[in-house]
Structures are given as C-alpha cells and as structure tokens.
Image 1 (cartoon, rainbow, N blue to C red):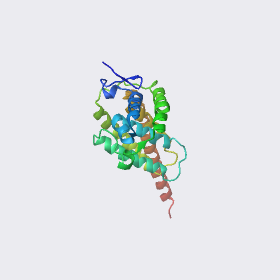
Image 2 (cartoon, one colour):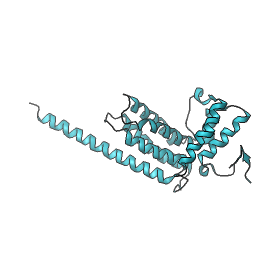
Image 3 (cartoon, helix red, strand yellow):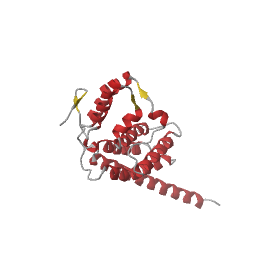
Image 4 (cartoon, one colour):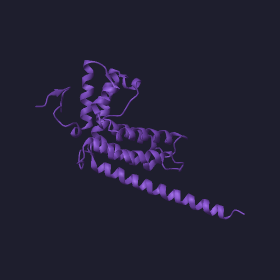
Length: 217
C-alpha cells in the first residue's frame, strides 16, 4: 500500500526504473523538512537515472552553435568520463566529495521542488518508460558506447559540429532519465548521422590534402 509523503503518493514499492524522475526528485526534496539535503543524497536517490540528467545538462551547453574555444572539447572529456563510468557498471555518476557533500539551502530545495519538478513533469508528457526490455545496467552499458563516441567527436577540430552531437545526447539523456526506448533510438540515430558526417569530412580532408600535394613541384 502506498504512503503519503509531502502531500504526494510515495512510490516505495514501484521499481526504480519505472518511477518518473519528477516523483523521485519531489520525494527526495520533501525530506528536506527534516534536515538539509545534499547533492550526493539527490544523486543517490536518482541512481542510474542521474547519468541521464548529467548528459542532458552537458548537452544544453553544446547546443550553442558557436562555443568559446576549448569548450566543446571540455564537454567531450566529461562525456568520455561519464561513458567510462557507465560502461564500468556504476550505479550513479561519480561526484567529487566537495560537490557531493554540498548542502542545498531551504530556499534552493524549495525552488527545485516547485520549478525543477515542474520542468521534469513537462518533459515526461512526451517521454515515459517504454521499449526498454534491458535492465538498467545493460541499458547504461549499451548507451555508454554512443556517449563515448559523441565525446570523441567533440574533440575533433571540425567546425560547427557540436550542435548535432548535442541533440543526440539530449535525446539519449532523456531516454536514460525516463527509460524511454524511443528517445534512445532517436539519439542513437542522430549519433549515426554525426559519425557519417565525420567520416565524410575526414575523407574530404584527405582528398584535399592529396590534391594539394599533387600540385607540389
């Protein structure tokens, strides 16, 4: 039988992978009334879903068409680090101790509960658990390949090639966050387009180099 927490229905008996992330965040923040909530505690409640949230936040940065020099490579490095953690089977993203122990103020927790939960609920109108026969661990490891490849792409010195990887990672992040196979397939398909463009760009560069060398005396 469900219990009530902070005026909402607690879903303690619902499998974590099937529980909307907005509900997880709302219940975690409702506990703030009994004491301060740390970033580490929120990450622990989100478990594997925290990887999806992290990927979404990073993807929003790369959706800017023209980034400051080095920004895309920095995000790519974070993607690679996250992908390695996912492939290793970590249940949640590793956070530095200082960040993990950071305490949210009562005002910040209340804003997250009123605004952050509302944003997640709007996302969940379009995304929900579906088409995901794999376990959470298998889903993370399969997705880690796509995240790793997009991280490597962001290292490449190819102009204007950060928006498409950003869209791919946004879809993958939402798919992981809500265990939504449709968004995961869309994100993987976009990643395939990105890799095709990279291959075309590399081949065009090689052809240009060969042409330039052919004119050498």
